[in-house]
Each structure stands twice: as C-alpha cells, then as structure tokens.
Length: 265
Ligand SMILES: NC(=O)c1ccc[n+]([C@@H]2O[C@H](COP(=O)([O-])OP(=O)(O)OC[C@H]3O[C@@H](n4cnc5c(N)ncnc54)[C@H](OP(=O)(O)O)[C@@H]3O)[C@@H](O)[C@H]2O)c1
Image (cartoon, rainbow, N blue to C red; front, side):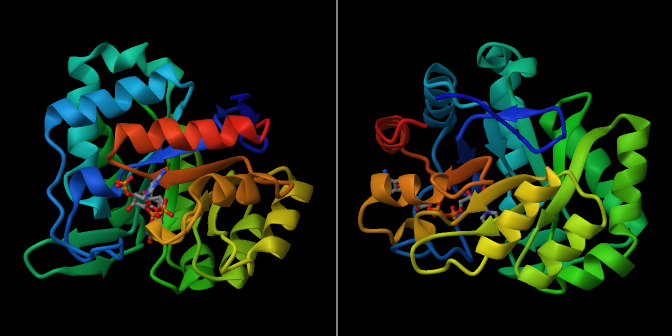
C-alpha cells in the first residue's frame, strides 16, 4: 500500500487504518451479532498488530470511549517494541466521550479542562511522548463542539505544547465537519459507505483545503456484503486519506489489505 499524506499535517497514512473498538469494548456496539463477543486476548491482539505492521498499515485508531483499547495498545505495543518502532505508527485517539461499561452509556464533556485531562491520560495509557492525531469525539453537537465548547482551543494549545501533532473532529454531521474545516483542523473523520454518501461534499471541501480525511464505517460496521468492494469504493473518492476498518481477526485484516491492493491503492 502506498502511504498518503494526511492533508497538510506532515503525517502520512496507509490507505487502510486499523480500528480498535473491538479490542477494548464489547458492550453498546452495533456490530453483527451485537454485544457478547469475547474481547481478544493479548496474544491475538499482538498478532493483529504484527500482521498490520507486516502488511504496511501504519494508522491505528483508538479512543477513551473504546473501553480498554488505549491501555491495551500501550501495553502490547511496548512489550513488542511497537513492531518496528513507535515512529512507524500514526496513533489517532479521541477526546470528549467517556464510556461507562457498567452503566452501558457514554458521557460527553468537551470543556478545555476535560479535554486536557483526556489528552494527558491518553499519553499515559498509550505510553507515548506525543499523540499524532486527537479527534473530538462528537455526540452530534458537532458545530457547537468545534466553535464553543473550548475543546478545540485546548487541542490547539496541546499542539503548541508538543503533546499532539494535529487535531480534528470525528463528525456526525456535514455542518460540524465544515465547522472543523473552517476552524483550521488537521483532519476530519466521516462516515462513508454505499448506504451513506452524505459526506461527499465535506470530503471535497477537505481535499480543496488540504485537510486530512479519515473514513469510518466503510463496511457499515460489518454489514457490508463485499468488504473488498466497500473498501475500494471508499478509497476511490478523491480526498480520502485513509479508511479506518475495525477488526479483531487477522485473516480479515489480510483480506482487507488484499482488497485494497487489488484496487491499486
Ligand atoms: N462505530 C463508530 O461509531 C465509530 C465512531 C468513530 C470512529 N470509529 C472508528 O472507525 C472504525 C471503523 O468503524 P466500525 O468498527 O464501526 O465499522 P467498520 O470498520 O465498518 O466494520 C467493522 C466490522 O467489520 C467486520 N469486518 C472487518 N473486516 C471484515 C472482513 N474482511 N470480512 C467480514 N467482516 C469484516 C469486523 O468484524 P471482525 O472483527 O470479525 O473482523 C467488525 O465487526 C472503528 O474501529 C473506530 O476506530 C467508529
């Protein structure tokens, strides 16, 4: 796979990124079969990361809202020398959403102090000196989050302090993604699949402005009939930097990379 620039952040990402919801959380999710799948053990997660590195994947996407995901990435990567070194990875995490596994519900806080505390906790859990990308983890109030919550200002400050390279928004609305572009973010994450192409104008606007664009739910959270076709569809849209696909199955990871490379990406 040929790395692509993540907008003008100076980061380069593989066209396929690795989503890590399922290594940290198995409640309150919308995958086929719903909750109740077993979290993979450390050996399987290590195998997944080793396979990702071998296949040329360099983007790993996590979040505090993904339960134990950040902590497990930090522990398993550091125990294995980050499979080629920390510097070969672009680590994306988020701030603003906290998932309470016992209550089965999320709480959202985007204030500057909450975002600062979240960034500091992510640095610690992941065991890194710097986070490559931090996305505000929207609950749907996208434009308010970007313009008024104080979270974006705090992420600008974290960039100036050298704790974060670039920040952005994991958006739920086109208006919110547009607000993030106007606010001068480094990247946005949007949903794109054959059943939801509503983000196309935002993707074009990001391309025009030189802003990185990550796709989530390209496989419709596992409901896509043909994963290879779904990946090629998302990657063929101009302006897409990387498609982040969640999997805990190394064979699926290999299949997905095969689907991507067969498309010439
Ligand atoms: N869901 C959200 O609300 C959300 C929000 C923001 C960001 N994200 C990020 O975007 C990533 C992707 O979103 P997502 O996880 O919701 O959806 P997705 O990537 O569209 O789908 C993930 C599902 O597809 C399955 N899958 C992957 N490759 C497959 C293959 N080759 N054949 C059959 N099934 C396959 C996975 O199961 P297996 O484990 O069995 O492979 C998993 O259940 C997340 O991991 C996260 O990093 C998600």
